Image (cartoon, rainbow, N blue to C red; front, side, top):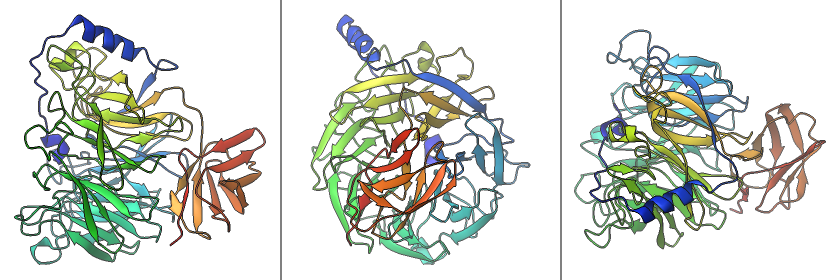
Length: 504
């Protein structure tokens, strides 16, 4: 079982609910252009997967791809199986693409990444030749190849226990982290699509000097400056986590150590998720613990120079012992075309059932910190929270709806796949999100057949419509950082975030 299933901490808040707080919560719930529309698309049953701990990824074919920690035709790794890779349509038809057997990995706990070659890349936390996890790639039809088995080197100096998704860099290689074991504090690595792995950085290799961080559970992002940014769960000045930057060659800089003021920790502690870059060039993330009013986590903004601002403290709104605005955010935020961030909390919620179950929420937050709850899990009758319990991260489909998974709950208490509409419109998304002039770029979208043009911040380029959901294009000469647009007879679709044109 992954760390997410181990962490079942309670948000115990001994504070009285006041009339003013109730009015504030009601006012907050009313914010928004429309009432969110929630749909349970699939209930896992254990045999065809179960207990997903990661979000989904939209494939070039328009389907959603994901992983589950449980599921197998037979009990190979434990009574629940070794885990699966699956595909699900937007209508809820699920197909298992691969059952892990322990030899090729065990406990896939991070979301997949689709490479520019069309294949999906991922990690398993355990299993493989040395029982310390793997890197794999899998086709959309389910053909899996193990690229690397961790702990192949003495003292696991190549890393162990990866729990985060991979990111494909502008150089075509994949970058990721390992969470570490009892020997190491984790690592940052680079791996080619052919499986050649290079360790770029080892966090506190002797588990004694961890001033630069340890246990980097969250994934990396390549920012507009061409460098990688990430977080660590532990280590740093107070052993409560860090934010760091690392070059593609492995030069690491600690930008921020959480809880620098000793026991106050009002800026949060122990981030489990990675970062996302905002339109202003700053980075946004969550901490799973700490905060001004409770130990339930925060949303924060941090500059590339390390200046951190807390935007929201969870469990600041409560009824009795229920954190009605959520608690324990462990997944990365999503930046939507409306300029706001969306995310989930692993626990908390407004319903009375949340005093028995840990529930979880979906929320929206503006870059300035205005917070809006959108959905509270366990909103349906017990037992087992039929709409899901313990939500993982969100993905925004190019149709404008969010999709996600829950680790537990549902009809069989093995978790669910759900969709959530909040009134956003269709858009296009580039893969990768940055590149140099001349680089090939994939463009995901909906109903792209008949496209008449593609522009990068106003500069036209050559393109090819591969399918109704995918276009191949080239970063044109003279292009600058900005919006990618696909021009159709019915109108124009714009990218959800800027495409960064790299100069080096």
